[in-house]
Image (cartoon, rainbow, N blue to C red; front, side):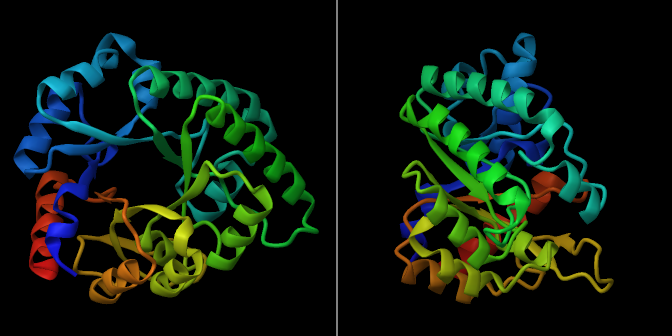
Length: 278
């Protein structure tokens, strides 16, 4: 695998940098040396006074917006159990607000020429006979159709269910505009299967990748540990070989959600990728 195949496909997840403004985001991307971004959409919708001109500012600063990211209302990531109960489209009491927010995000994307966004759908039931299966299927169908009528694509973040479960759900969903955003570290953090095996299982459904690393938990039922890319248990040489096998042609978005040296850690990830793929 040659880095030249991916040099112009590298991006940074904006929320990793915790930016205070569009210019702050661009400044940090300058420091990293990557001028493509997977952009959090919710701040633009929620705080237009600060973020309303984000697309224009980034374009002026030479930053390409590769794709978007959305979050659901009231998500609590403090424990595995709390996110199981509050994550994604699962809770009934946040469903209507999530649908409203997503619809506004879809309009924002169409207005600014952004074709694809990712989000965590929540813990998808593994069995069709699970009472929540039909509910989650209907909700994802509804969201998918909101984006489809606007010519937009959705990618579901991996990790909260096994590869076979996500694959089965995507097949039941049967919406051409819905695919997967593959995060190898999440498979380890949630202890939901080997990342490389899961990547091969999902195959052509993988349209985007997060570059993130982690170590598996030593205490069952708790989070694993996110670490700097190249220092954890993701087997990156095998991972990129598997990407090549499935014919992956999407973006590689570096994500860092732990620690207080985000720019330095993302620069380290970029350096690691450069050395690995050169």
